[in-house]
Image (cartoon, rainbow over all chains, first blue to last red; front, side, top):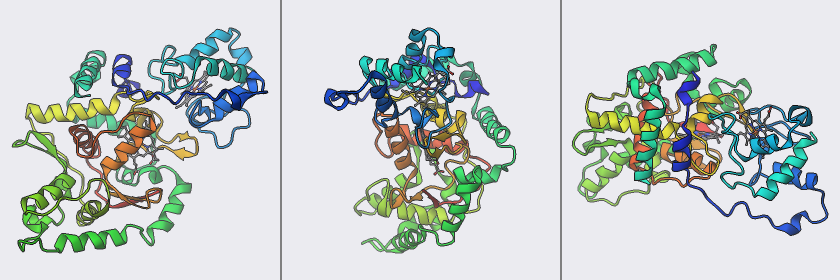
Length: 123
Length: 277
C-alpha cells in the first residue's frame, strides 16, 4: 500500500513554493549559550526545527509520534556527518519520507543545522 | 503555476505505474481498502466523522459538542437566506433541481458545457449572478451558511460521485489526484503524507484524520475559526501549514481536488455540516 502515497521526488521540488525569509536567525538571541543549547532552542522552535511535531526528544512537551524517538544518537550514528545528512535532506534515505528537507529547502540555515546536530548527538 | 503543475503531473505519471494503470474505480477500491485495513474496527460509514471515527477520547468531547451543535444557527441563517426572494421575486430554489432540497449529493460534478468541475458553492454564486444579485464572498459567512443548509437537507444520502467517460472529466479527476499526492511547500509534504501514511498518528498534539470521508461533512464549523468554512477554506489552511502558497477559492486546482477527494468518499453518508475543533 505504500505505493499509493508515493510522492515523487522530481515533482516535489517543482511544485514547491518556497517561502523564504523564515530562516533568519537573530544572532543576539543565542549569545552566551553552548552550541547544544542553541540547537535545542532551534529544534523545539515551531517556526524552525519543530522536530517535536514528529519526534519525542529530550524533555520536549507534547511530542508527536510520526517519527521515531530520538535517543542514542551517538550509538546509531557513529559518523556525525550521516546524522547531519539526515537532517539536511531526509528524502535521500527514504524518498517517501514526510520529514522536511531542512537544509535543502533552507528551512533553517547551515549554521543552525550544525547546532541541531550538536544537540541531538548527545541525546 | 499551472504550467508547473503540468510538469509535475508528467513526472508523477512516469514515476508511478499505479497512477497510469488505475482508473477512478480501482483508485477507490485501493484507497478505501487501505483505511479499512488500517482501522479494522471502524465501519466504512463511520469515516464520515473524521478524526472522531478513530479516537475515542476526542470523540467523547465531540459528542458532547454535538448535543448543542454550534452550526445550528448557521443552518437557520442559511435556510432564511435560501428562501429570501431576490429583487426579481425568484429564490435560490429556481436555480436547482428539486428546488435545491436534498441535492448536495449532485456535487461536485463534471459539467460538459463549461468543461469544469462544478461545486455547490460555485452554483450558489452563479444563481445570484443569473438573477442580477451581488455574489457572496467565498469560503465562509453567508455563502457557507447557504451551503450548510443545503448540506443539511442532504444528510443521510450516500456519497455517489461519478466520473463520466469523458476524457476531460477523467483529466479533471486525475489533476485532483496528482494535486493530492504531490509534495508542496517549503516543508515538502503532500496531503497523503499526513492523511494517508500518518492517519491516526499525532503531529504534535493533533491526531491526523484519515482522508477517507474527508468530504462528507462540509461546510464545517470549526472552533478555531469561530464559524463555518467550506472545503476550499480547509484546503487553503492545510496548504499554508506546509508553507506553500494557497490557491484561490473555486480555482480549478481546488475544484479538481474536491472532485477527487469526494469521489474517494463514495459509499459514505453525507453528514454536513459538521463540527470540528
